[in-house]
Amino acid sequence: MFRIRLFFYLIIIIYSLNSVYSQSQFKFDDEEKRAVTLKFRSVNNLIILSATLNGELVNFLVDTGVNKTKIFGEIRDSTALEDAEYLFLRSLGSVEPVKAYKTTNNVIDFGPISGENQEVYFIVDPRFDLAKKLGVNVQGIIGYEFFKNFIVRLNYHRKSLRVYQNEKFNRKLRRFDEVDFRFIRKKPHLKFPVELKEGKKEELVFLIDTGSSDAFWIFENDEISAPENSFEDYIGYGLELAVIGKRSKSKSAQLGSYTLDEPRVAYLDSESAEQFTADRFKNGIVGSEILRRFVWFFDYGKQKMYLKPSRYYNDNFNYDRSGLILMYVGEEINTVKTPVLVKINEDNNYGTSQSERFEIRLERSQILQVVQIRKNSPASEVDIRKGDRILKLNGKSVDRLDLQDINDLLSGEEGKQIKIQLKRDKAILKRSLYLKSQLN
Image (cartoon, rainbow, N blue to C red; front, side, top):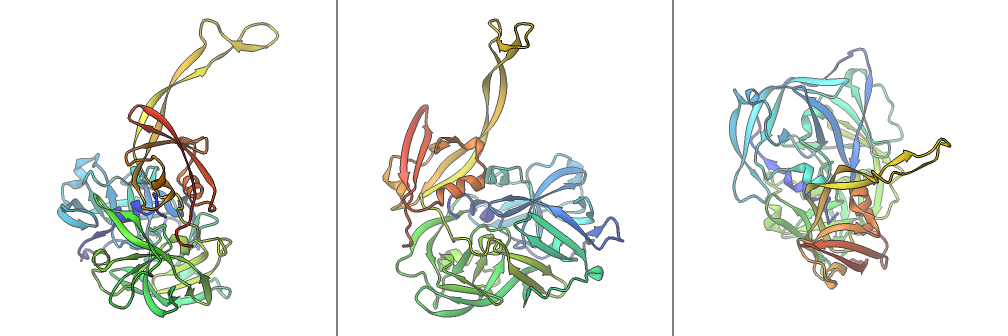
């Protein structure tokens, strides 16, 4: 992803000290059950799971790339912070430290699974706003604490997490490849071979990260650098700063016995990469553009993963071909006039009343804004500017399109025309561009 999909990923990268506090684990409400299924909402292949936190509804981003449960936003009940520890955390793209409260006695309830005495970091910094970045109401993120006590099957096609009790798990995974992983800071890392574009083969260590929508990130070092024909791109966004990398492809990558041909890769320079490699043990990140191509079983207890191809396995590795970097920056409420139909005769015919032609209702709409434009891209060749608000794409209001629709449209086939209606100050303007690949 370029436009939106990595913005929210980078915002939630927080480095903090490991806690010595011993948390209670999540448990099945019905201990007799072998497994339960949790249906999730998919936003650009990111996993959004609803729960309650201390009785309040919360939408969590489920992210194997985090080791701490975090909540973003104001605290409604200040009593929850009476015994909290006040912290300053470091976050990518932030000059100033991030303010947070570490709390312990929290209850997180996913319905058939719940956990008491959960440690939660409340991030009260107003710069954190996942809802604006994602376009959906997401207030928190959870990872290691959700996975650590169960065996979890992840199926992107079915949009489901099947959660098994360890002692009751009896499935024979004969059709799955078994791979071992290791934990680094309670995050799963996998080592596998990658053939780079110039033909060089490397065994690289990747963080397995369901919280990234991209395919591969590779961190540059003395031995690995972006190919000459890669192009510079905005590959994500921190709190305040855009993250710039180089976009290219690799020849192949092999997970288990399966070989992915020409997956796209974003290279981060060594300075940017240092913000992701505090442990200095990994070479990059594998995101859900790769992960969605498989059905997964995660067994954190045995440090094993099992995978087999899903129906998405042979999908093209499409990427943004417009050069538009878009972000939700808020919402507004507009008044909408709707015709009112009233009965005008005894034959049950309906028409518009002469005395009351319309009713007025309020409608909430998201504000989708251009925040960057990639150099040498189709968007850079027409009069589209940072700060322009996108109203329609190919005649459809962006309020009627979800994030996946927008990304699919702007990642379409080369040569496809995209008609754009935008708002600049008070003027409504029309622009048109043709999608173009910069990887060919």
